[in-house]
Amino acid sequence: MTTTVENKATLSFSDGTPSLEMPIYTGTIGPDVIDIRKLYASTGKFTYDPGFMSTAACNSSITYIDGDKGELLYRGYPIEQLAVNCDFLETCYLLLNSELPNAAEKASFVSLVTNHTMVHEQMQFFFRGFRRDAHPMSVLVGTVGALSSFYHDSLDISDPHHREVSAIRLIAKLPTLVAMAYKYSVGQPFVYPRNELSYSANFMNMMFATPCADYKVNEVLVRALDRILILHADHEQNASTSTVRLAGSSGANPFACIAAGIACLWGPAHGGANEAALSMLEEIGSVDNIGEFIKQVKDKNSGVKLMGFGHRVYKNYDPRATLMRETCYEVLEALGLQNDRLFKLAMALEKIALEDEYFVSRKLYPNVDFYSGIVQRALGIPVSLFTGIFALARTVGWIAQWKEMISDPEQKIGRPRQLFVGPTRRDVPPMSRRG
Image (cartoon, helix red, strand yellow):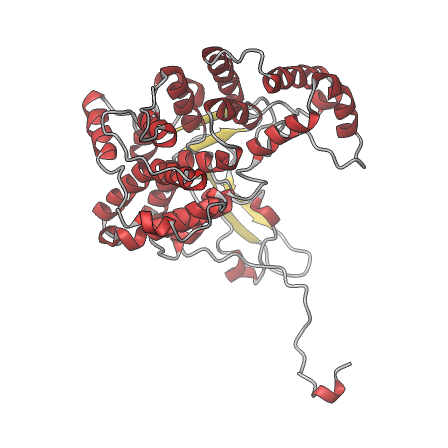
């Protein structure tokens, strides 16, 4: 642990339990943390923190969020600088290795990832076990988990080389699996990776090329996809990242851990927000209907919610939203969709929400999901695959967090406690006495 102990906290009790002194750790930035690990052994008491809103489950040097300032840092670098000055694989290298690559390191890393993009040919038969209308996320949970059956030569998590090989395989093969899930759902043949293309261009080619015609790579769209991937690459200790760490704490192999993260991300409260924002715009339908929609949002009894605004962590403007908004304009202009109905509707809704005191006072600013759904729709990505793109982007963050957890000497198997409120001990009555 690189944190330092500068102060101590004293916990006193009103039930006669002796007071307990606990160290306070100070990180490089962010709130101080009280070490409560000896609480149970010393007092016989647990803490109670549903949702872990006030609990630090680990120490980490990967990603930092300041929700009040609207700041997101990958290894100390602001997300707005990375999204403008780096591509996705540079960002991957940074998250995995703590520093940005130089030219030689980048070339070596790109080559390594590129030469692992193919999946085992047997995976084609694995896909055929799914219904054609299966949700892409269920397909990804199954196929990513199945990678451990095809690549069992890198499953020794105690071996640093095995961990590196598994990390590269996951980052390289996720685009292939996501594209295969899409192709399978629309009844088109799978498209093999092409080593001469960049990471994002290769993914788009696997998504949209057919044996009938090559896919013409549009660099504006490739940059847009690359930016989406960078903006979603990691986001501190969120639900899916915590799931990956928890699964990994048991010693599960990395493919199983990432599959667990994908399953968690599938939840609509986590990875489905951009899909929900797009659905909301479709339901509003027209700029003329925004006034009535806003009225319903303000009515607590209506059950109508403003999707794509506000964030559990960011109490200010989501820094990713500004970048995604720029990308949205670039993509729609490149495709001649400046008059796109949904984009016009989104801009009008954004303007009203940012000027309305009801939303301003609650700091309900547009988040990254508000724009990313529109961009993905413009790229030709179906709504059902939005969360799959999210999983593709977040895989590198999950892997970086998993590797950090494995190397942490203080890490133990996750075992949350509970406040039990059920029946106390009782005897099983005979059948004749059960009312």
